[in-house]
Image 1 (cartoon, helix red, strand yellow):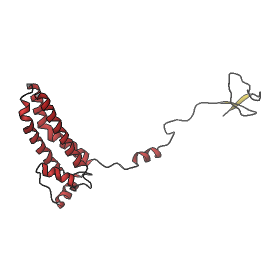
Image 2 (tube, one colour; image 1 turned 60 degrees about the horizontal axis):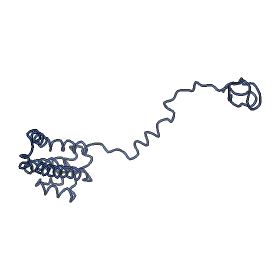
Image 3 (cartoon, one colour; image 1 turned 180 degrees about the horizontal axis):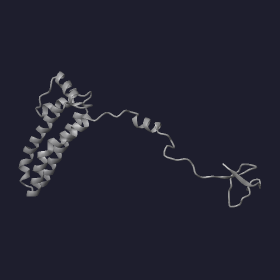
Image 4 (cartoon, helix red, strand yellow; image 1 turned 90 degrees about the vertical axis):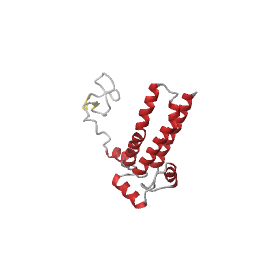
Length: 179
């Protein structure tokens, strides 16, 4: 029963972690502070940067989207501390191996999530039709070389050879021309 309680709490914590990162990534334009992000800052008691500092940090980090890195890092570290406290009583019900795994996970919890966020927040925006333009600019038959096949045709009616015979199946003429 206690292992189930631990799993339920761990699930709540990881769900909350996902929600924090997704809300931070949804901040548009980069560096703004919409109400949804302000609620997370309040929830984790992370001080909100002033408007000038927010834009400066976003510009320095070359963010293409999201909340400022410092605020996100503060929220994730606060969540990790809270997670450790919430899981402490439940860890006693786990085996030694499981408890060690949880301990390692909690140590990398915030840093791993922050690195993921940083990667997503600073990736260059893809142009809307970039892939379509590249495909359109590529020659349709660019990968093929010149044809090396020949077709015997009738000298009289220009019909192609259809079988083994060297006479035209349409007009009876000789198949001597090549096209």
